Length: 86
Image 1 (cartoon, rainbow, N blue to C red):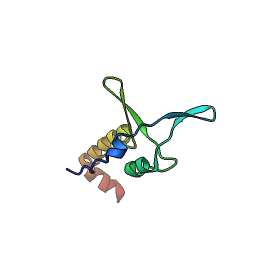
Image 2: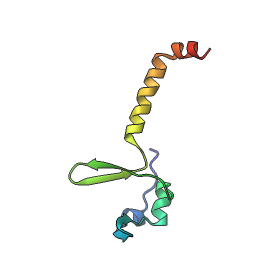
Image 3: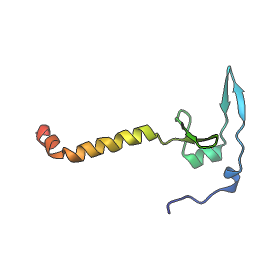
């Protein structure tokens, strides 16, 4: 149960799409950026959810899966890697 307490001001916030130069962008409040631990230049990954939903997250599921596979390989061949490191 490591969930942070919910902040109703952030949960009920509406993010508006705005024109920024020749592009469109989302403006995130300081409170929301702090809650997500994001800063300028950070990346958000878009994960499509059922029923027309989207999830924006700093967590990269592809990278996490790659790291999981790498850990499994390192565990399985740890003796080989140790011998190669000598």
